[in-house]
Length: 143
Image 1 (cartoon, helix red, strand yellow):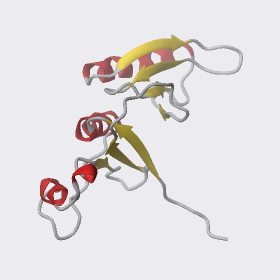
Image 2 (cartoon, one colour):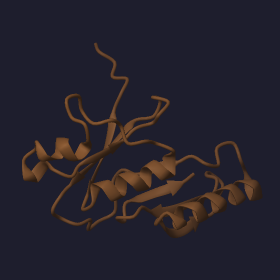
Image 3 (cartoon, rainbow, N blue to C red):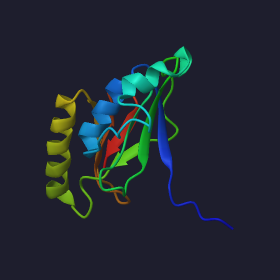
Image 4 (cartoon, rainbow, N blue to C red):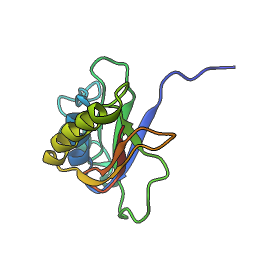
């Protein structure tokens, strides 16, 4: 049996390039070079049918994290995500030290266009995290 080692996370969105830039800034990812045979992404885009134009991607420059892909869809987001990303900024931290790290990163991401939804305070089972939305309303957590 084959064991899959790589995967991609795909976002449906209205403005793929805008959402890709946001997530590059959040995660320290980069836009990959265009496909072989194309000097730019714009040139590649022009080779596609109109319904497939405008997609974007970002990758972890270290090659460790998953590739993120952003595709244009006509419909807007209408319900809560069934899957979301946890941006791990407080790993190993607890209490006030964790909250300070989460709040600092939250402020940075809000400046990039994210929206803070609410703090989910620590309880008997979980440490605190902050529920947020990206530039198109996709939920994610600062964890």
